[in-house]
Image (cartoon, rainbow, N blue to C red; front, side):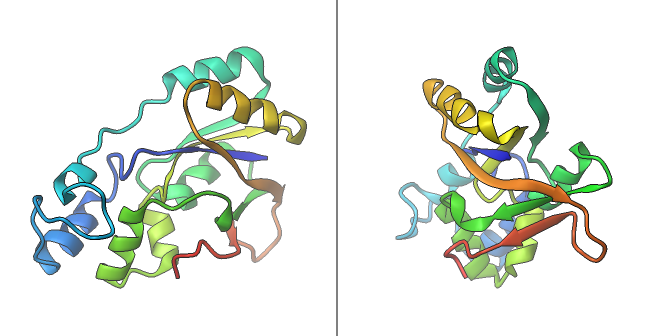
Length: 175
């Protein structure tokens, strides 16, 4: 299964698009306060990128990890296929984790299609760890003990001709 670890925001990806949508086209400033966001826009955008070394060390010391993907530029769509063999694909259940508000704001203000959002941004998932299904609860508990949120966000499947390497299923509530 795929365990997604929550991100702290945009991390270091998608800033060219975010800047265009929010500051250039949207005419907002770093001091702008949007009703949907708890902090000024500049603070939301500059929330530090989470470093996952502590989480990876804790998980790999106790569990058999089959793969780890840091969700950077290219989002889930481009980063996940880098860690699994050609005969595999990932099925992501969109409704399994909360999408941070900044991504909803970007999509609405910029008129950005949902698939593009998942290709450019991390959408609230900064790290994905692949484990056997029977280890999912242990992985999530280990992450929780470290103060992190982990979610079962999907599963690995056999690649089928004509299917994308990362298939998104369900709604994320932000259509």
